[in-house]
Length: 240
Image 1: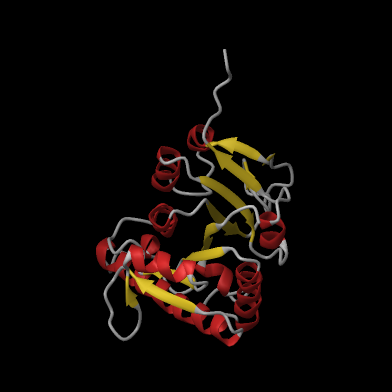
Image 2 (image 1 turned 180 degrees about the horizontal axis):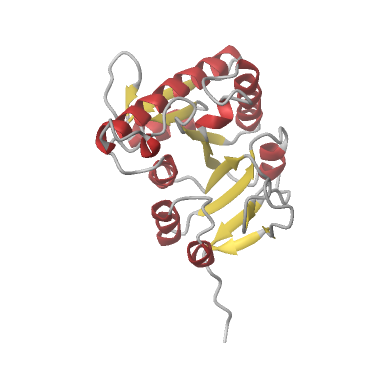
């Protein structure tokens, strides 16, 4: 396999399928099968799931303050993590949910060394509860967890097959980027990941791959070395 250990970032909206809110069980099962296949091939899989299918803190009304709204969004990620765990366990895949927000009886406290041990033992680990702090996105949480567990790549699964200069769903002439560097990604403000997450990946030379979450064999093909989606790396400096 191309990578020994990965961090897969899924959006909460993806779990809703075409419903917009909540969880679509067929979609949930399909994603679980994709992760099961990766784990069966020997890849150690960590996962971060957003909570946008339930609540998006950043878009909360003026009635709810930002800190409370962000905490609500973090709790939404715990619900998605538990749902994904159930889907994986029903497929015979061992899975652990670890939360940055302590909630005994629902999820394990986030302890990096324990998470790595679970991964090495063949379990999928889902990191829930965001960073545990407001004002940070699940993209930033994904970058943090990837670095903490020593993942070789952060794979962000989106609704399109990579990075474009504009939304390809709305603009048929959008330009596709098969490869680019972190500096260019920040300069162009492409919106694929927030600037904090991109800066973390750049500072620690963590490779990022962006693929289509709905392309069922996309992750499997990527892990086998095929050119799938877009890749973001540190800027290469020419010799001489």
